Image (cartoon, rainbow, N blue to C red; front, side, top):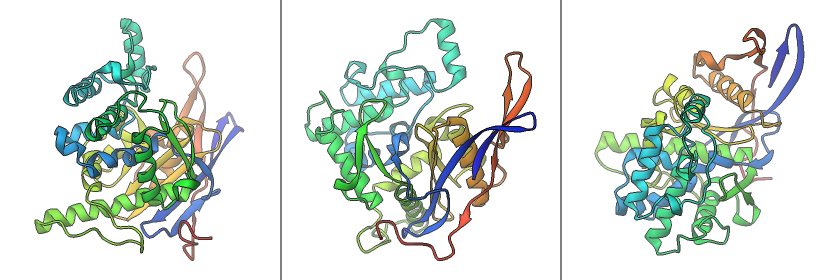
Length: 355
């Protein structure tokens, strides 16, 4: 699979796509390119950085709403309502915008960015697409009595707790996870695409457990998927929040929100940076991780939509079937389009973590 940039009749640029589709037992179901490619998970790791909040009792203590939990998992568009909710969350935990160490940046939504620029709005850290995640990390520190100062540093207990959670869900030992500093200042995680996909596939089983609990009126012990891993009940609120609030996970006109709205309850989609996307298909029990090699953001959204369509989510949102290329006069002079598809893995391949 690749994303081609076509001008006239000539392919003038190619964006290579790597992808892994994995089931909850760690079996590689389909792939394109190199499913073992190691890259940084970036913001697609946010649901797993949010899990300690539920697991450790933070959400219960501070009375997080489903909307607030969704924003902790989000790369939001800095829409006014989203920013207001983050401010409310900070107030709940006894923090303020001054405690946020994510720094400001222009909104990820071009429409919102243009509106704020026209109005001359001064952007502060709460407008960062990661402000919900950072508010969650401050809440985790408050809950445990850890210092809120310098919570972004790799040695801080907050970052060490998130690192352990990522290790648990991906089956990658802590010592084998490559770490660096993310764009918002916290730790980011370098792992194989198939390990990312495994973590998302396990969220599918959390969603299944949630539905079973709703139908039976009781929550059964976590389902064992491997000898070492059982789905914790803490995953249920994360999955529910993301499924219920696609408008908060990204925002109007953004691919995550569009794909989730196009198939309500069928998929959770989470963007990373530099061409990374992840998704979970709860009914199919599959996790997906993709990386466009050159980090092209539009190409990665088109590629993920094509992968999800091949896995049964039809049709794609119209805006993600192809992307017109416009010149400075607004004329269509070409397009970005996906060429090729997934290769089915006949034997399933080795499980994640196996040689």
